[in-house]
Structure formats: structure tokens, C-alpha cells
Length: 497
Ligand code: HEM
Image (cartoon, helix red, strand yellow):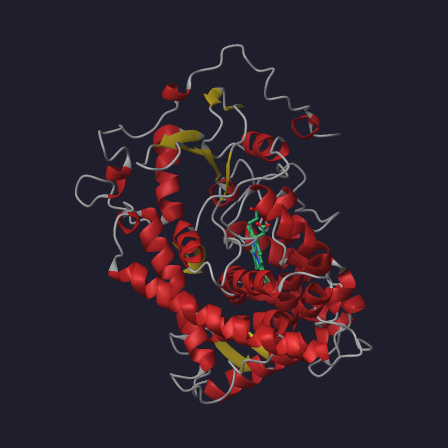
């Protein structure tokens, strides 16, 4: 039977009966000047740091129910919803140019470096400016042929990662606590191939601390920590240049200089090209007339959006496979039967025939998505959970919280990939389609999703072809640093098969 919630026609304007006012939306007490930010203060607040976002949302859900609001000085009213129907309405009624908030610090940086940035870029801009870049880029990024073009290079990077694990693995097969940094190296190397048209060498044996690759990794890591700190607390940085803002700008300067260097190299190489070989994504953007400075911004956005996300997503998935040896074995059987043992070539056809791998990735996304939530600044008045939400509010769709509720997924805390397998006894038939949306929704959906899926598929395939993976330490949860990160060291054991 068709789910009536999905087929419901949504008309935000026709709901006027019994609608409660915005002021009635539950939430913390609003104090003069500081609004509800006192909730984060030590002693008088809840004592949950901003990095423990999921924990904080679970607490607010207990306190206030499916919808609540925050008032933060200098920002639009913030409304959080854990009701899938609200989320469906939010995304289905969004206009032509959806506005996603966040990374104000990077917007400010780009506005200052006007000589290098002609726009805020696809990740950060809004309105016509955003669509101008997005419309030029999305076809190129999402065309299947352009993505499968990278199979060989991404497969080589995954092989290099496997070799590196063998190289740095201690005698007891258990990785050291900084293994997450290794995952960032893999993800950066991957984005580098696509965005910078080069192998940065992040997986090389002895990476000097002042090497370009290590400095890129450090710049990415620092940027995410700083953005999180600066943008979730009282915005002192808007009034004066704080030491952290200065260091963030330095890290971004390094990204910018390095990216400009590689884009210039690509532009030069294209000048002598007869275009008889297949062009990479970046080459196509340049050849199709995108201004090199817009391509540079696009590539920096890829570095900002595509490194932490892919690394953390893969880290969580490896964790769930390590904790669920039966699922790991089932996945390995699928990989061996469709692709074969290590060394077998991976084809796009084979990648399309791995339903259990897709199910494992989806289930890991459900439990530990890279993005804890997604958000929009609304361009019209909406009624959410029976409350009137004025145009211009920041509405946060709490995907991870919803995914953790038993009412949406029975035994929600358990890793059960079979939920996503059609015809399986454990298939989840009743969940609302707007609960799990790891790559977002609508026209602003992740532009790198196909590349991300390709790189994660290949990494997991290679790891399972080579190793039995175990984990024998504290259960893992997440903390937030723009994206969700593992809150425990990745002490995985990689045991040769
Ligand atoms: C597992 C990996 C990834 C996850 C989970 C992820 C997730 C997301 C999400 C949730 C959004 C916001 C979508 C929305 O507002 O509805 C987004 C946007 C974006 N992502 Fe990804 N992403 C991943 C990897 C990548 C990669 C590898 C790239 C680049 C190669 C990339 C580039 C972008 C860009 C440029 C945007 C902004 C799109 C726009 O505003 O038009 N992402 N991503």
C-alpha cells in the first residue's frame, strides 16, 4: 500500500486552522542579549559541549519533543525538527535556490581575498550566484562516464592504502591511535586526483611535516576544528580578528595557493592538448568555459566538503564491519563472488552488482552520517508540527536523531544492513524516506556523491579482500567537528586473510 505520508500533497499555505504561533514553539528560556546560548555555558547550561551534538539533541528531544527552537544573537531564529513529515515539507517546498547556512567564517575569508575569489563558491553562495556555478558543474560531476573514468586511479589509491596499512601496522596487527589521520590521507589523495588532477603523495612512506601533502592535511584538520569552534559559540570573530580566525585564514591561504598552482598547471597543459584523450572533470569544466578562478573555488570546496566526509564515513563503516563479524563475512563473500580475490580488476559493472555492500554503506550512514543534520533558511512561511515558522528561519532537519529512534527503525541502535535489502525478512518497509538522507536533498544535494560512493566502495572492497578486520575497544560514537567524527581512536586490527 502506498504510504499516505509520502503521497500527501503539500501546500504550506492551506494550513491555517489551529496553527500555534512561533512564540509557542518549545525551547530554552530566551534571556536578554544572549538568547538561548546560555544552554552551552558551563555551570548554568546542560554541561554538554557543542561537539556532542547528537547527545544534546537527544536531551532536547526528551525535554521538548519533536520540535524546539533556539534564539542566538545575530542569527535568524533556529528551529529543530525530528518529525519526518516536517522534513519532507521543508525540502519539498524549497524554492529554486535553496539556502544552506554555515561556514560564515569561510565566506568572510573569501570576501576579504577578493583577488582570488570572484564568488563565495558552490558550497557557500546562495541565489543566482550559487546556481550560476552549480548549473555549470553538476552535469559534469554526476555524469556516470565521468565518474567511472576514475575507477583505475581510485583503485590504485585504495591499493596504496592497503600497502600502507601493511607498512605501518604494528606486530600485533592493531593500528595506532592516529589511524584516523591515515584515513584523511587516503581521502585527500582521492580528492586530489579528481580536483587537482595530481597525485599529492599523501600515502607515501615518510611524509615530512613540512611536505605539501602533510600541510594540506593539517590545513584541512585545523580548518574544521576552527570553523566548529568559531561558528557555534558567541561570534566574537565578527567583531575583531581572534587568534583562531587568523590561523584559520592562514590555513585557507595555504589551500588557496596550492589549488591555484595546480589549476594553473592544468590550464597550461590544456593549451598544448589536442583533446584526443578523455578529459578529467576539472579539464572539462575549464574547456567548457568555466573561469579558472571559479574552478579554483570549486576545487577548494571539494577539499572542504570531500575529505572529512569520506574519511569519517569510511571509518564508521569499518568500525561497524569490525564489530559485526557475521556481516563482514557476508560482505566478503559477496565481494569474492562478484569481483574475486585481491588483485582482481574492479569494473563499473561489478560495482553495480554489490547490493550487500550498498546496504552496509547505507546502514552505516543511518547510524553515523557524516552530516548530523541538514538545514535550510526558509524562503516562505511554513507550518511545521502545527507551529507557524516565519520565512527566513533556519530550520534544522535532525536526520541522525530521527534515524536513532526505534519508531523509525526497530532496534534502531543495531547495525542491520538487511534493512536495505529488498525482499529480506528484515527489510524496512515502513520507514519514512526523509529520515535517512546522507547526501542531502533536492537541487543542493551533494555534487560529489557519486565520486564519494566510488571511492568508498573501492576502499571497502580492497580492505575486505586483504584483511579480516577486528575492533576490541570502547564502543564508538561520534562527536561533531562540522562533520561527525569517531569519538574513539580507530584501533582496528587488520589481520591478513
Ligand atoms: C561520504 C562522503 C560525502 C557525504 C556524506 C557528503 C554529504 C553532503 C551533504 C549532506 C551535503 C549538503 C547537501 C544539501 O544541502 O542538501 C553536501 C554538499 C556538497 N558536497 Fe558532499 N558529501 C560527501 C562527499 C563529497 C565529495 C567527495 C565532494 C567533492 C568531490 C563533495 C562536494 C560537495 C559540494 C561541492 C557540496 C555543495 C553542493 C551545493 O551546495 O550545491 N562531497 N555533501
